[in-house]
Amino acid sequence: MQTLLTSKPNCPHCNVILSPLPSRQKVCPNCKQDIYVRTYKNEKLLLKKSDAVSLDAIKNVGLMTELEKVVRHADPQLSLQDVVWALLNKIKANGVKKNDLNAASTITWQMARLCYLQGGEWRSLMQQSYRELLMSCLNNKLIPKVQISSALDDNVCDECKALHGKTFTIREALEKMPLPPQNCEWCRCTYLLLTK
Ligand SMILES: [Zn+2]
Ligand SMILES: [Zn+2]
Image (cartoon, rainbow, N blue to C red; front, top):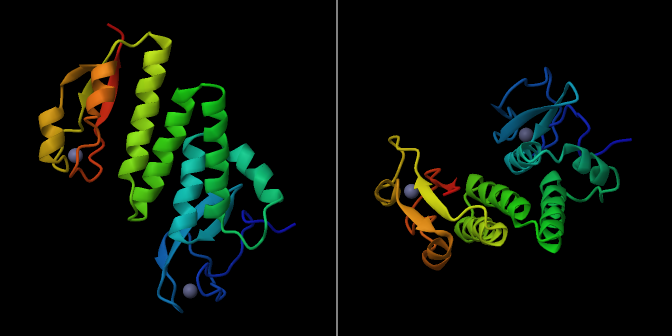
């Protein structure tokens, strides 16, 4: 049975048959668009960027088995990206329902990253992810404080550099929501959870 995870020799944009099959990212000789290559069960999947990064997100959060299940029954008109977003939304809703905000936060973070990778609006999802993380700290009472840690390499923006090392109580962080800073373009700064 063909599914969205079946290996096919066609360009994902223009459908032209590629021979030999590209083993890594390349430009389609016919339509000149980028083809992304991912390995699934020892076969090469030729994908659009939106589908490739969506598949990466699923691997990152360990949901491949769940994806395989939904892909089997997915409407063939849908893209892999569509199926992945539906799955992420479902898993996140489950987390919220079970009051597992830490799990929900992980999923929301991946959604923010997907938007960022495709040049979309990611800030509001990132804020939501941090809010869920901080709320889970507030609920379990094991984490009284957070500290901001930035990557401190050349890509870090001035706002994040200035925040590095600052500590906040969970309530303060929820009130001020220092991350992500307003003009930050994904510097990879994050909260470290402090147990005292
Ligand atoms: Zn093409
Ligand atoms: Zn920044």
